[in-house]
Length: 458
Image (cartoon, rainbow, N blue to C red; front, side, top):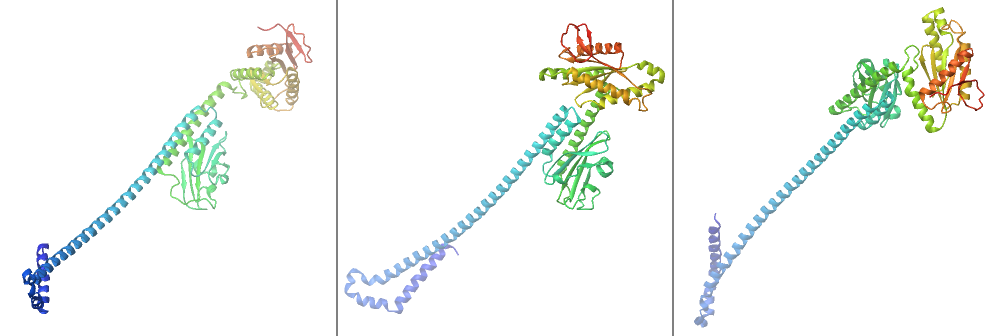
């Protein structure tokens, strides 16, 4: 029903009610009797006016009721709409918050990823700059800590003989529980040359070193190159998980291990080439080429720190006769015996080299001429005594020695070697099996050691 029709029937209803009340109560008749005296002013028509007034008031009241109902309905609709909007806004805020958290997680993940990639690049540069295998080990451990920071990790590298792999570094919650050494027969990675990953809980792993009650997951990767197992990267956790590393992390770790292995291989090749060019093949001592930079460095250091460096030229007496009598193979054995005896009876800082043929040279840093003289006297006596009792020597071997000191005699390596060689020549003229110290011509300093006067060297 339309609102206009509703209003019309409401007004008719109010009027009829008023009319019925007036009729039942004889209101009109009583009213007329009461107001007959005042007919001049129209009071007899008042009931009709009141009826119409009641009609108007009823209509007005109903209209207001209808308006209130409509307003209430509109208000309810508005409130419901506002509630819907509030819910939508709350959902939007929650969605924005989730997106923000997701974005922050993505940004943090990307930041950590870029940080690790930066560490990988820095590791590559540091590995390329490393010269020795020890430096490579230190660089590898340093950067692996930043690349794999969230687990217990151990890095093991092979010794020179590749018979034992020792711990170079460990970090993480249980770093004190990692094993310190591993052998080939104890490690799946070393035996097979490929990664070993196991999450079979405890006491069931193929890796015997991982079968500890607290270890539930392990992942080991080889550090290898050209079929040489230089090391093992061992990762462990107390959590039983399918994978300790994500696919991206695992790929990165494999690439890093391969890079480390390649640098180890290259450094080992350089070391072997250096050994081949700077070492004597027969005795394993430095050769003349290898000695050059060593002696120059020792002289420079001695000048900076203010101490003496003494050089001794050593020659095996009558070695040609020894070779002619017993053959060159026996002569080689004698050379190796002398080299080993000299190397075993010097300080770790001293340097011994095969200068050529049956000649050796000994560099004694922070050693005066007198100290060197006493030491060389002891050495030639030991060689003579020990050579009588070893199968590698067919007869007793004696040595002639000449010594010269820097800066007292000379101040550069070439002149120092020449001075020691002149003193050696004098020792041979004196009768061999003795030590003679170089003394420049014109020197007046008293010396308690045997000396040979020579012309001053240029």
